[in-house]
Length: 336
Ligand code: PSU
Ligand code: MN
Image (tube, rainbow, N blue to C red; front, side, top):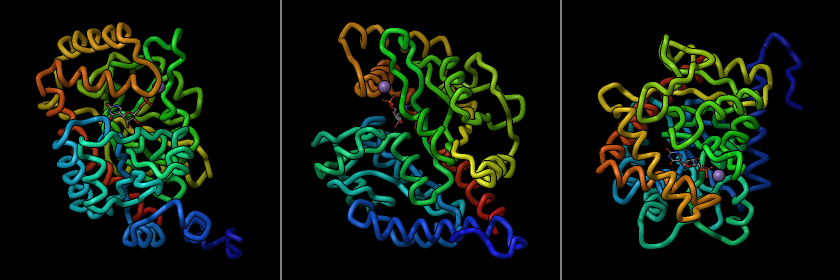
């Protein structure tokens, strides 16, 4: 029973009870499949700020050794803001919420091939004892499962430009609509169809909000995408309030918070556009399909911008981590 007898105790108490119950249930039923690091489990149960981080960015999004370095730096930024970092991945068939440095190294090192684990890949990875990085879709799903409300990444997947032929729509969007988690990203890369991605998010009930008054929906490397954002917030408190209200409604849908890349790190739109066009036609020519498409395009864009895009990528994810952690801190204050 999770409903409060004394209604005056309000929703805070309910959510704390639900969380503790969830953790208890998870640790009993899923104990052999999911491993929550002790400080993270304690922080969740006592409503302290926790920030989830994905690992496909480590296994497939960035080259070694920058991938490992950035993952560690991002965790450090989260801690500096007073939140607990929960990097999520799959190691030997076990979902890890909180990766020790050995596991993180295992995901980062380039010697052995690591799996890219989206939502549909979880049953297979777990049953076979495999190791891999979790995408936004899989990480949002796990975050909800263990009770983490805020999740920080660089960019999310979306509707691909050739959707009419390929029907390629990232599971990130569907999982965002199924899990009440606030996802902080720098918007959507223009390897994707940004307009259709926004339409899809509207259809499946995801509240899309851009950080900063008057800002348009950002396109990862650039602060502008040419697409209007449905909404803006101007500070961390307003952002935290979005997910707080959503959870009070017991809404199942998540929130997408798009944080424009800092001005000094943004790339010239025209230049990046040419590189992206080249990457897209190369992918078509090489018959790249399915889950290989996004990593292929990311690699190609990085190679053809002479590392400039990698530098921007690293700056924007750290910026997202700082803002996301402050939001998690505000949210935990609201829940007191
Ligand atoms: N976009 C980026 N960097 C990334 C990804 C997307 O700019 O690292 C990764 C994320 O992990 C995201 C995944 O969840 O790619 C989406 O893959 P797909 O399009 O196959 O769903
Ligand atoms: Mn896809």
